[in-house]
Image (cartoon, rainbow, N blue to C red; front, side, top):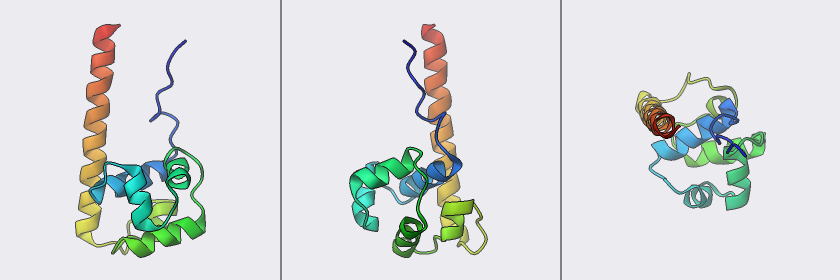
Length: 110
């Protein structure tokens, strides 16, 4: 049985949520969930593809200085500070590099 690639089925919104978490320096999603006032299971579901509720987006945006619900829900960066946008972009690039390395290793084994 072929293993499902967890990153392939993530929605754009769940990816943005993950990048925000990583940009804030949290490798552990449960710790980040606590910071933003969500349960660990609920947060994990959002990050793994369940649609982010507007209430949860507001809660998260209120805990991260400069983060907007517009970014979390729609991906619009307008109104966010450049420093936060740069940190999110760096987290995105790091994750993409790690994915490429993992894919190369998988291809080498095949």
